[in-house]
Image (cartoon, rainbow, N blue to C red; front, side, top):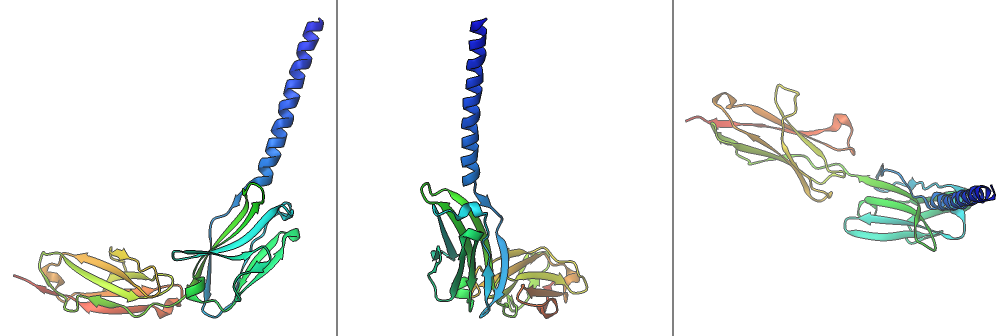
Length: 245
């Protein structure tokens, strides 16, 4: 009888010890859990002011946490703020960790400096474990230049593949370039080559195999990005000449 009681008591202690250990482990995991949200898309324009918010629970406001904002533009990665200290005169930090607030305000935005990815991070000081993360893709809007088509002389040969390439220089973000055959509002399938910078060209290549009846056909190229209103789309129209043998 005593043996059975001791066995039950030992089993109870085993369960209790492991339950406490699990509770402590779970608590630690919850304390250091990384909150990662998808990148938020934000648009602005040259010279404007924009605020990127970073909000976290008050649990992250303890003194054993570190805070920073970082910026990625092209191949460059820089810290722009550490705790309450901003590292650029055009940036301002609202650092109130006791309220779960760590916002970055960018004044006089510029494409060369600010067009890119910003991240806010809260880390545990000892382990370096991420406690909170927020990401923004900031686009400094710039309209693209008017489109142009190559080759200049659109002389194709019947039943032979012919490429029409419509390009636009610049634009932030990269513009969409869409081909249509005049008389139809259905977009034509084309191959896009993105510029990736407001100083480079984005192109859309339309490949066709013209027939006799395509001689004199007109094709329309339409360019647009978010810096423009829908009614301000840029476009150009070209006429195809087909050599029929």
